[in-house]
Image (tube, rainbow, N blue to C red; front, top):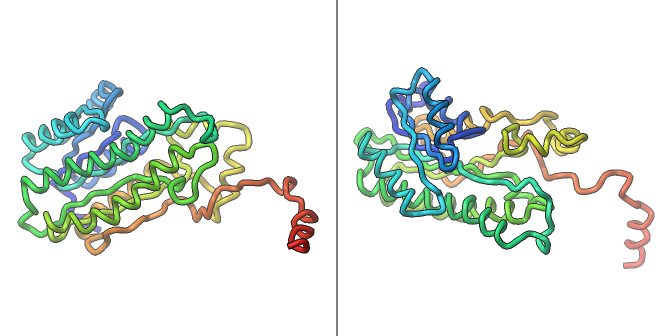
Length: 282
């Protein structure tokens, strides 16, 4: 299937590793020109890009997604280089590995997570829409595409990570609002959200390496397996396609093996007699 991404310009935030690199590889395989965004790991991104055969149709831009000024400069650099941006993948994010109840989470951690995961995504979208306002829609009718990378934590919550879950659930409001705003700039523009479950990346690997972690995670899924970064990337590429997903906007597409929530209690922790007694009492 021709996804009509050949020659399109795709900007990917958080492209220095994990899902970001997988996104770059998948867009490159479709013939796209790629702007790889990075912040603290920009040198790693450049070194990795130098090893790729498609490096001549890619560049690295630096910005802290918490800074509207830095993001605008990065987007402007891409516009100067390629004159437009057709696809934007708001992928940059953080997940603190330490479990902590909300009453224990340091204010600095909570603010950082929300500022990167939610505000960073919002500012990324803001810069993309501003770039689209400058360039206007494509003459061929291939609509612009904005894709957010969320998390099943935003749908189900995540014990010990309320900051992360809150930052990802807030993306729902962005998607459902911006699907109406983007068409004011491009009548065929689309906005969607990919919602991964547990995915094997450098960010998640320490948690998954804990004894019994994979078993606990797999208990929540009909498909007893973990996602690979490429599984998430390929879904995002499909949503970005102006041919394959031309009539898909405002949607949340979950890629989590059928997950319906994380197991909260182990079987031995459930006291069925106490539950039955409480039912009778009420």
